Image 1: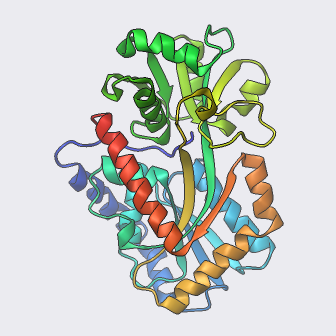
Image 2: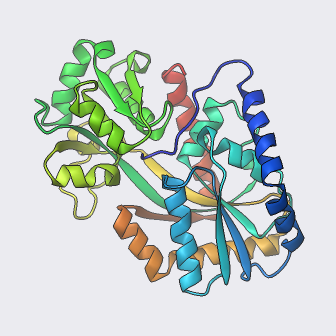
Length: 336
């Protein structure tokens, strides 16, 4: 999906549950991380571990493995490996990573999904507990309906949605995901109470398509790339995309140009562990920057319809603070 999947939260004791899972993962991965600790401080371009805080096959996994490939092919890092630590919108991985003090030879993927996970799960750990390196790419959502739907535009959809919001089911990624938050932002723009949204969470774009095809939901949101083949085949219709401008080569209007100020990216970036030296951080920043300049990474952007949004330093830190605030406000509007 446009988002790796969160667990719904807000219930008492969820933090204990999540960190109980973390403890189990720590035990299971003890031998791996003891090796990592022993090698920390070695030449960072010899061996580097990239953590995808989600399961294999998801958005973070593909994002991380695309970097791994670009690093290897171009000799930026001699040996780069990917490790998956899934769960709770990335906060299980973040919790583990926040304990890897001084381990400069390990990086972790992050993004808007993780910021949502931090809010939903009342996580005691956030990005201030690690060292953000860079924002690399944006993935934008499409709002789609079945090909035989009466809705031709966002206006058509909103007009029907306003009549009885609770009886207008949507589908997309997990509860509190970017998919869900985009619907909330559209609701606010349309004068609809986001707390009245009826939302059916699914685990993939394919499942979301099946849900609208069966009539169980009237519209779906997910990353455009999840829907692209079905849109091109004429099986579903894209009404709008959450990007600030039209995507190159994609003949679908933005939501904004249709009169609704809904711009939201499923952005992804990389984090360094806490407690590393400034010199180590600078080297890691250089490695990530060089990776984004390779032909392999540029091809990954094109293949996945990702937008280059490279950002480092104070600009990136300010962006994180603003995005965290925006996501927290939307989750509150959804009454999650």
